[in-house]
Length: 405
Length: 135
Image (cartoon, rainbow over all chains, first blue to last red; front, side, top):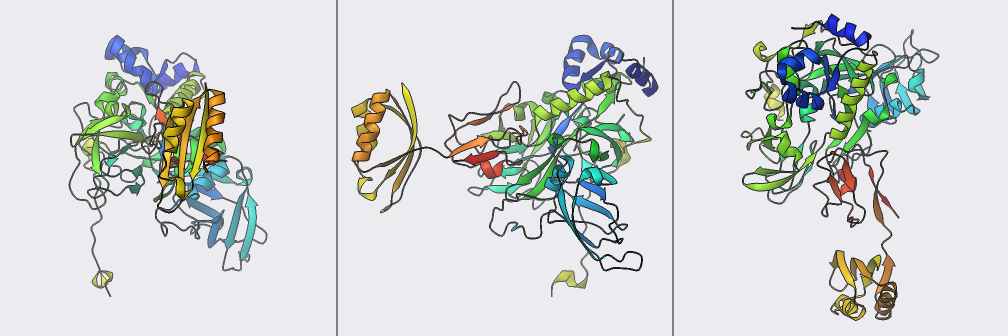
């Protein structure tokens, strides 16, 4: 018997909903079968914690006296975007201080950036803000230097255009003797290591591969507080090749999410540094999946063995768009600590914390069991495999002789 | 049995002498060389763990010093700041001694300080920069 969102929410409010994590659902479906599991279980919780570079914070500071229209803003020396209304600011997580040496002395350390500013704000620390303006009749102030604190901001919310990638490539390095410094961490030369970044069987979109329940308006766990899916994420690619179980065999769906930073906790919003690459923010995100029917129950029982990721050479094929994957490997193999590539044994290293992913799924489960968190029916579902939507490369159309002088 | 983690500095004139094998034989010690570097005409440096009875260790180190080897305890250590560590595991393949590892059952990232040779490779590789050098 299919269930509705309203029926599940009634059970949640009455404290009678059966809520399990995506890990627990694997065993339940194995023991009881899909039909019984779909009847008995109301919600499956998922979780993921990893670097999500397309993230940032929207802040409104309120006006100083006299009033001011920011034209340039720095938070702890990290530039923020302010081409918006007077005192609205957007700070992106990969932004660096202007004086950071970057990769001038390769590999650069990238100790601090936008992601770290956001973590400090969430932790309740004071942040140094400097602003410049050209001055107008309505906004005369031209310069400002002040400490700001999240408690005093009118709004502070994460506004992340691309989070929770549904699956991702595994980075290896085929070059003979050159370690490479990437957003997948240091990938060691001559198949010295393989980096992967997904919670696999706990990951939100891998448990709802065709986006049957996740869509615009879905209430989620974001950074330790409540958030929402507001749109398909950038690069959302539902037409990626899929395994027989419907799970994409590489990077596919993404979601754009928003959430109040004032509810968040710094252990789930962590500024991170990638040696020789740059800075980012590790975000904790969890999505409850209402078990509306048997099909959804089956999807949420997906196991690491049944999710495969493509192995990509980040020394050449990936950066230069040359050639396809070296093969596919399951998350069970990746999590065993070693995979085989071109007949060689390669040690694996994750960038996504499974420990935190598990804690998020568990906490979300407790919120729902306590009746504090309801599941929401999306206003609109995300484009799925039948949408024809893909991920296109940039078609370069040079003008002015392609910039060549 | 006692254990000492020490740094030995060999002046250039001692580099071709079998100091370690002499100590090990004379004082009945177990040894594990963690790091060693020798440059021609310069000092040689060795980070070594010695294990033996307390009396033998004291005698062995005194003997080395008498021969001209400068001996210091290994004071620099790498520590994991657990408040910062997110247990992602980005450090495990760079660590040459498997001091950093992932528990395959619990997925917790573990740091075994006894296996650490303070090479510091994990320090810049850790995304939240939780691996810190302490003196």
